[in-house]
Length: 196
Image (cartoon, rainbow, N blue to C red; front, top):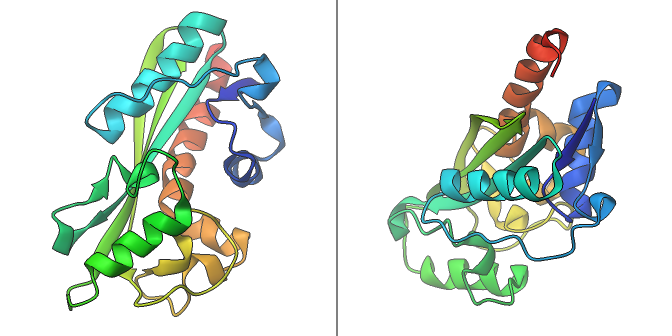
């Protein structure tokens, strides 16, 4: 089954394709010739994921899923949240974003945080939402060089490593995106025989 994943982030495509396995063929926005910036104008992760998935479905006619992910930090009232990718500015610089978080938390002991991913799946014009959450804490400094985004400063609970220190397969088992994708995969496998 072919599905468009509404992203051009090669890391994300690789990460999710490895979870999906061979039953599904993931196409990126590049693969369908979509090179415009898809709007993300909503105030929630759910809203942004939905907006992106319907944009691709309505304009290109492909069944599609889109995700939006936010890092939600307790001591910062849920920031950066929906603004995670552009927390330090519109240029979406991961280093600057991490530095801003570390600076804001410099004198704060409560470092509890969670990553939350919401996936909007649009098949034949019908939408289903899936959510994945992983709780953890913000480290005082960056550790590891794998992964992307805030991975070097986020340590999931009950683990000794940051996301950026983990093997991709290990991260996939427990990550917010991994958990949301698992729900997506289960749903797709359950409904595949219903002529999607």
